[in-house]
Length: 422
Image (tube, rainbow, N blue to C red; front, side):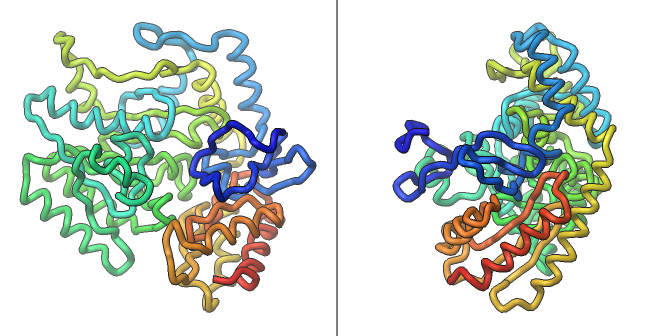
């Protein structure tokens, strides 16, 4: 592979980065490089891979669908994989959700949800345009998704182009009531001003794998119901078992008006997004007036091959002991994390299901902590793919990851704490 590739990689400062590692194939929890290295994928290739690389059931479904139909315009047309997937998603989703709108990624799923929430109020002739979000939120990199995320270096260049959002303080342990009171105050101050609240249920992922209690989410949802604003659950990262239940919403008894899905939707094989909507949202656009149509699409909306991959992914949950694998990883996390408690370099330890995070004490904490690149380089030198969020090291593995592989991951993490200087 050329030393000077024309490829521009995401979240990469090419002036500082080493040449990208060329991956030839993947199997299970392992990635194999072109020069023969075997690297354990401890972060599910940016949180997308659920059952392991090259899972036969999903890859076979993709091949079979590609031989029949790859793509058709989704306005006015449909196909069996899209219909089957929608029925499966509605069957496992919170009972408040009745309709599925397909898109291409987590960012687009969020864009769709925001547009649906605001558009529903517009079609009711009661326009509302303000959205409420959580501190430390990350919902994607399109303009609407950036607007409802935390403001900082990621989106500073585009700040003048982002719409105004009201932020709730993060419900850190011991400070949960502050968040609930902040939402109550906002809704009381402008009862007709807000269209929706958007949250990452239970775990703010890119914000540092920050975890909060299900009871907080229950309270926030109750306030939304009482004040008549829509609740958007961004389950792009937390969906499909990552937090221990199929969706994080379940742990809060939450019935959102809109739910955003992507990442694990196709088992990590193909890009795809889905926004699930309540009948109330759908009905706001259902009219003989064509101007009330939901005007949104991408060229590959409802792609047949991606839909087939997603159906096969959900069939894996039905056919294999995925729940037991999830429980096993969660238990293994707990056992290994307990060994770090009291460690002098560790500021906090967090876990939710298959998501484990270790926050290191650092003078420059945050995404741009100088510790982050040092840790990531150390892990790759030891053939472990971990991509720390600054001074936060997290493990979010495919469900096929063995106990031996998990122990190898944690052994290398433990070694890094005594080897890498702040």
